[in-house]
Length: 374
Ligand code: OGA
Ligand code: NI
Image (cartoon, helix red, strand yellow):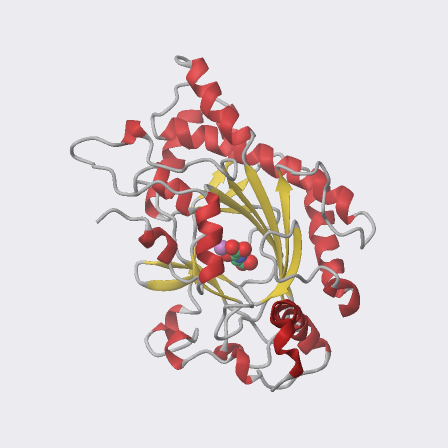
């Protein structure tokens, strides 16, 4: 009998930790000049990006609606709100330009995220943890303790708001990352609030002229809401047709504000096809998450998206995920439910989502399906 049996609990914890450490991620594989995708990363044929009838569409770009955010403050606000409503109903995705976030804040944040992934592995690995609730967590794949097949991505995930202990947990290296991340988080939170205000108005839930107090109530809740940032790194992959950077998934929150560098990779599922989102320099790709789909009782849809990888270039992106406070109950707005449009989702909250993704392999829109009323 193995002598370790009597220390089962301790052994298990160590195992989890060394398992996590054992997978050094794809940046590490790339740095070691890997020439073939290891078996662990090879998807079953049906899940690969270039199979059969999708082959052609894989090279097709999608022209997402581009919203000029400056228009929101001017005389064309109502036209912009219409365009916003259309984008949310038709695509669940849009790009935002003229958003007012200074370009140097954006550029230095992307540059610092790139530098973080270029740190020696030993330094990055200090942030590896099997605990999904860690405030700053470095990892690989999607959910490395659950994924049957691994995805070609390394990531750094940091809770940015609210800060339970008042401390900002961004890594202290590279120098300036923490300072810049705090500035960037504040700017994106502001942009999120302005977008939510516009979205609530586009849904007829607030009217800037009339019920000022009600507007303040709901916006106040978003002000106290949660913000998690994820820096993603997709290094060059020797056989990009065998794997994906991220599986098809939807995001959990209200909105995700994504910054992508100049390298393509994000695809969304539109009219049965996977289409690539063309990067626009300094623009944000905004997409609707499950919580907003629930809140609108299905009117604005959270859309499946995935990431493909390429053989030539490292791609770095930064996603900022926003929702209501972590413990807040998410439910359809009573004003968007009536006899013709009955309630379609059960109550949920962030804790329930965390429990769900910790217990199974997250994919497709399964979480949303699990709370859908039949
Ligand atoms: C995400 C995501 C897309 C990308 O972080 O949820 O979908 O292109 N990212 O990195
Ligand atoms: Ni996503």
